[in-house]
Amino acid sequence: MSETRKRMILDLDTGIDDALALAYALGSPEVELAGVICTYGNVTMRTAVRNTCALLELLGHPEVPVLAGADRSLAATAPFAPPAAVARIHGSNGLGDQPVSGWCRCAPGDGISFLREEVLRAAEDGVELLYVPTGPLTNLALALGSISGLADSLGRVTFMGGALAVPGNVTSCAEANVANDPAAADAVLRGGLRTRMIGLDVTHQAVLTRKDTAAWRDLGTPAGRLLADVTDHYISVYEQNNPQMGGCALHDPLAVACALDPTLVGCLPANLRVDLEGPTRGRTVCDPDRLRDEEKTCEVALTVDVPRFLGEFRSRVARTLA
Ligand code: BDR
Ligand code: CA
Image 1 (tube, protein in one colour):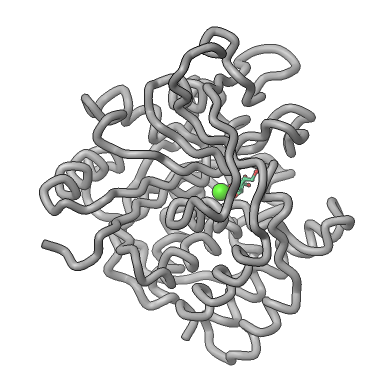
Image 2: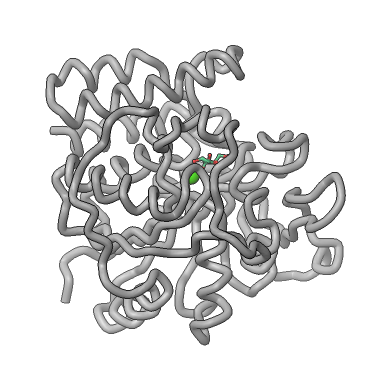
C-alpha cells in the first residue's frame, strides 16, 4: 500500500497559471502527483503536453506521466488553436514566450484510459484520488461518458472555471475554461459528479506580485529564473488589462490548493448548469430545474482566505524550487 493517502491527477491546458498549479502540486508533501492529462485552451493540446514535460523535467519530476487528452471541444470538428488574444496573455508558446526545451515524453495511451486505471488503482490501494481540471472540462465530460460509475468512484472534483456572482473574463458572462467548451462543463455539472467550483469569484482575489517572482529569480537556478520570467509575462498582461488588481490572478494554483484543503474557501452549495446558446453562452448559473433538490452536487467557492492561501502558495512553490 502507498504511504501517501492522497493522489492527484491534474488536467491542464498548460499555460502560465497551470505551470504554477503544477509547481504547487509538486511542492505538496501530502499528495502524490499520479499524472497530468493535457488539454487545449491556453495552447493546443500538443503544446500543453510539450510544456508539461518541459516543466516536469525542469522542476525535477520527469517520472510523472504526461497523457494526451482532448484536442478540441465536444462540438468542434477540428483541433483547437488558441486565438491571438489568448496567445498574448500566455505567450504564443503558452509560457510567456520564454524558450522551453525538454524531452517530450508523452506516456502511451490516452488520458481517459489512464484515468480509468488510476480510479481502480486508488480503490485497490485505499487512496483518495483528487482530480483537478484547470482547463476546459472536455476530458472529464468524455470520461463521464465512457467510464461507468465514474461519478460515484471519483470523489469530489475541484475545477478552476466559471463565475457565479462576478462577471466573466471572456464575455460579461463567461469564464475562459467554461467558454471553451460550455457543453462539456454542463455535462460535468449536471452529470451527477460532486464538484467544487473555484471560479473567478475567488481566483480574482488571489493575486501574486513581482515581489514573489523576484524571490524566485534570486534563487539563481534555471527553474527559479524560468518560473519568474514566465510569471512576469503574466503579471505584465494583468498590469495592462487589469491594473487595479496589482498583480496576476492565481487561478489554477487556487484550485489545487482547495483540492488539498477545502477550508481555504467558503462555498455555496448549489446545482449548476451552463448556458449553451445566445449572449449568455458559457455562463455558470443555478439550474432552475434542480433549485429545490435537497442534494446539491456543487460547492461554489465565493470567499477565500487569501493570506492563508498565499502563505501556502509561497512555501509550496519554494519547496518545489529548492
Ligand atoms: C482560466 O483560463 C485560463 O486562461 C487560465 O489558465 C485559467 O485556467 C482563467 O479563466
Ligand atoms: Ca488553465
